[in-house]
Length: 440
Image 1 (spheres, one colour):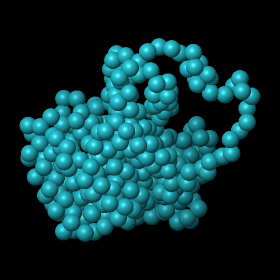
Image 2 (spheres, one colour):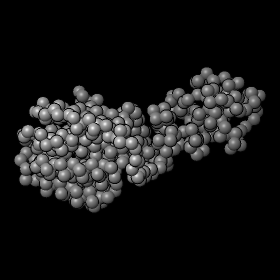
Image 3 (cartoon, one colour):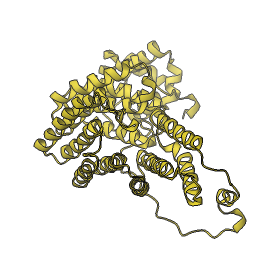
Image 4 (cartoon, helix red, strand yellow):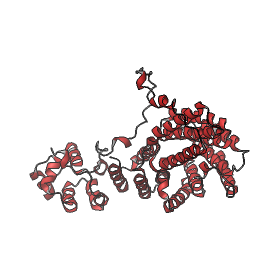
């Protein structure tokens, strides 16, 4: 048998898409397959024999048409040796085709909390020990620096995913909580409580992006208490909207609607809330779409657009300014796609993605663009446009390759599962080859 070092990683995409090669695989014309391997990749007869565990004489006979190959065992050896996707030869997916992280499977349950480990006192919570001797006062510059850190955390979250941010964010959260416990904030306590709420929400969001939903729920609940202590109803609504989105992801749509309603009630009577309310109604629309309540979903979408029209001249909170016209368009398309209205949804998602791709600072929207590209791919696939769906999914993969986000990985799995009925289509085979290249 050939060693792993001898086996090519991938066939050239041009060969996989070649009509001649696709047809040769479909009819299992191995003589032509071997000839095309030589002409297109330079793989000589002897090497083909080694890779497929065949004798050179047998390979020559097949090429000359003197012998045929019909044994499934031999066909599987050829598929594995030459890295021909199983679907092209009428086989199931070969074990090497899909990297482990994209194989469709339910997410692993979170590990149960372990009993505390008793360790010597000298090794426990060194930061807390040293904090006892930290007598530095909390000043306006402290508050300004902490807010600057939070702004940067959100930028890094969107560019690289939340999973890697959790240790830094949680450590910063504990630091702020120690400052609050010391009680020497000198009139800046409300500011520190607001920062505590923002960091707890960010920690919850990072856990949500890592699909650690129980931990996310705990941090969101902590953020709610801090937001209420700081007296900020709009930020309270923001946290409730995050909890609503998480419930939608967990397919707890009734709970998601209730959380969206609570968020709307919290923000409704505060000044400058039109953009906040627009975002909150879109959160409700997502949940209503999962419930397949078309009338309620359409009402929420209409209210989201109505509030957005009134928001242009308002001074909205910084945390909601990401919800611009482009985001409104994309989210409207996603809500319609969830309802199954793919004809109306596709142009909206495509237009939003086009705007995002044209934005001057599109690097700051890496994860969002990946999500939207997968939504576009899924919508196009449901409309029967396999080629364009695979093109959009390929763009999404390219965007997602630099992001550490289990939520994005879940979208990869979901889209790949949708491709199963079309496994022998040339665009699907080419997409799977690209997926292996990007994610292995």
